[in-house]
Length: 354
Image (cartoon, rainbow, N blue to C red; front, side, top):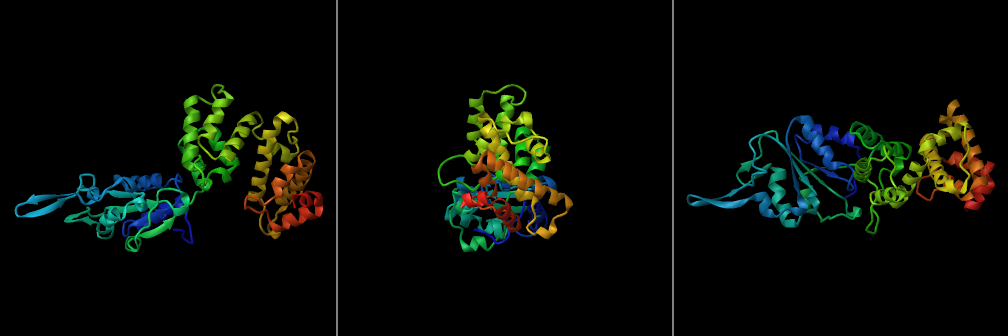
């Protein structure tokens, strides 16, 4: 499912606080973006225990329980993990990975908050979550009856919110500093092949690995750093991350270049650092330049003038990287007015790009 409108984690928290107590909510989103953690935080915020069930590992009897004879009749006894006396948050993770039989077992639990004769304690909340079909995860078609019993939202990553969480939870400074400079690398769409890819969860995993090795406090062999980075996040992002680590002694190199206090690294052994700086430069242009030229203030006008001069300098040093800075190969396009000025002032660069 792809909903027309998406929400960030912070917006979703507000939706859960307002909607989940009265209607079951289903959270759609790619793997590793923090859906489970956000539900746990919601439970903590409202002061209730969170009980998680993993849909892909459930059988119908895990939900409806088993029959027990009482006198002349039989009665289904719900499992202990569900049959509780105090209100709680029931989190049905990977709900759309369940078999059709398990989904049917959830109908009354989601719609009426009951299993057989057992009713969830008054005030309990039911929340479901699952991945989208394009995410390459375990996904089964949800019946229209089940879909119609829930309120649906689609969650996406927000680098600013994730960084706030990452700083609060003490993630490795290499990871937080890198994502601060390259927020576009926090998440990548799942690849078609079996390989690691970037998500908030995988960057968290890389942070844990770096902290375990004591990175930053002692020297780690380059091979080990490569194994850690390429084993956790997307290949392109891993290479860029390693280049960032190499230029840590020039942490603010891009800022210094923009101010005119430094130049693009030109030595052959610094090519990976130059590539990282060029990528960061493009990311800064995408972030800083407004779509409408009329929105430029005096500071931004100075930045635009400096940016064009730097692109010209970079084209003399490495034409391919200069073309990468102004290209749209990644689907992200610099403002049209800026590209018009590039065509006017640097025709050689754009002509070669074509």
